[in-house]
Image: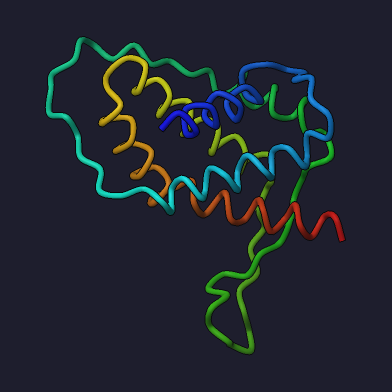
Length: 153
């Protein structure tokens, strides 16, 4: 689990700080997200610990996080994707996505996982990680990685 915690720290840093000092941020974020995806795919059964915790003090400032993501990745922007790409149909539905929004959503979800691990328990954090990936972040992650690959040419 130490690898997941390190990934959470490194990924969320891009939403917590405006100018993360790292060589080739675009490549680094792709590697971090690929490793995060691998952690998710390797995850086995997760269960909540069923303990009661004090009041929830989470408060993530979305506007602040968004501004930091934009400053860290100024080259990222809009892209197109095909809805239901697994279906071969003549009039495929094209959607517009936003790589910055993808990163924002992933980072916010991982900030929540990190908060739960630090303030509740590892079990609850792993459950939240699994839930967030399955129902939200996985799609953003896959879309973002496809966008980043296409951006490279």
